[in-house]
Image 1: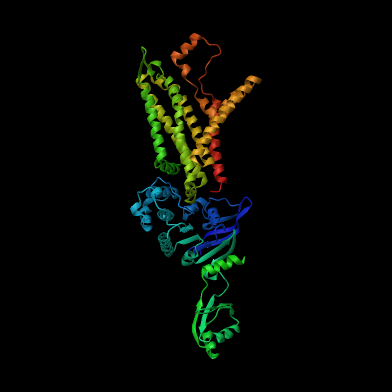
Image 2: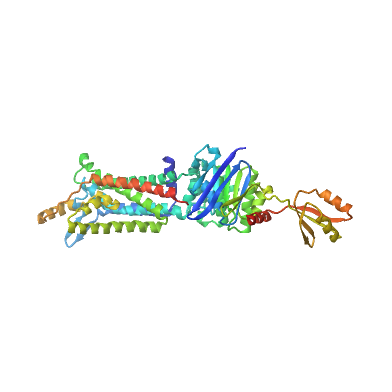
Length: 298
Length: 280
């Protein structure tokens, strides 16, 4: 599979502060990547470095397997960093025309992309008259002008109202569905969980994890189980090797798992021990739980 | 180069301040032209600027380039604000992310400065040519197109000043402060000149003569020397009074041409070096 971006031991220090600490990972074509991390964990600095606006202290990165120079590679990607940056007195059309000139592409896709982000009706208004949501959508339209091979989004829903967040998320899902590779930096985990296939987790500039979303934690989730005779069920579960801690909730017992389990097997064994189950299902750990666990561990 | 100029003029065209200031610049040039036609009637004195012979070829090249030089501050404001606003609007960062290299970015700004210097020179050339053709006493082509070196000097003076403003915009990042920086630098050179003169008088050194060529704004204004004493009326008056120790040179000096060329190159190189080193 084609590698779009390869980051190798990238390191950035601001004075005595280490913002990014020897990070390495690869972005493969066709995946949707999330970069997770609390505020100040080095997400934006990492993106800034691969986008040629922050100078790395050491380490390197290669776009498209090193086939083009860095600034030519940037013409093939689309990126939005933090807040939308445009010329305030130019209209949407004029701003996008300028981007086309910089990226060296014909301007015929401007209308199409403005339609995608629902800004056609305001295309002649000056950028400074736009609301934050509209500005962010214009930024997405701008990033899509060249039909990029990879779309990089840094906190695209920051500061937006619920409708705005929904609109942006819908647009991202639409783009992801087209097979565009996406790199999404965010601290909004449900946002990442909904669209990403792979994640990179950062904390204090260090990389904690890089890989598929569902392999992020080596634990196996938990089961929720209930029976009329809870006492007996509790005793039964304690003897099992797969059962970790058992928490009693109103609606049943939650058992964290040490290994993968077969739910039918559990049901069968319980019945053989004279316990009739009234509830049994597997609960996947949410990304948020995994994330908190991972960032607390280290 | 065409692409970079295209990008830069796109920014120039849609910026309100640049439009306004360019119009002001053109308006003042036209007004200055018209001032030649005004006849002043005062206490029986009846005359106009044209009677002074300042519109005669080739003197007009010297007079017009000297008296329109101060107008470059308007264009300079445009350059400073276009450059510094790239920082405050963070469009500089976006330009780089969109795939412009840092070198291309500085080059595109330099091309704009170069083009504006050429255009202002062209405007002053055309305006002077028209004025001269109307009022000049001599109309032979050989006289009209003599002493055109002043236009070259005018161009170089503008170029170095625009490059200086470009550098100030990159260095200071805020247009108001960048303009302040230019003003402070101008005062700094003036103070340095004063000190040098004092030292020269005390110790009979020639520091001032050197500063006049070495400092960028000094060399810039030294390129075109004052033409007032060249005007018939005034020069004959001076001759009559016969003041001792008053001899005037009007020629451009090669050392100034060299100096402003080097300064222009340095300002562009420093802008690039600054941008390259900075994290945005």
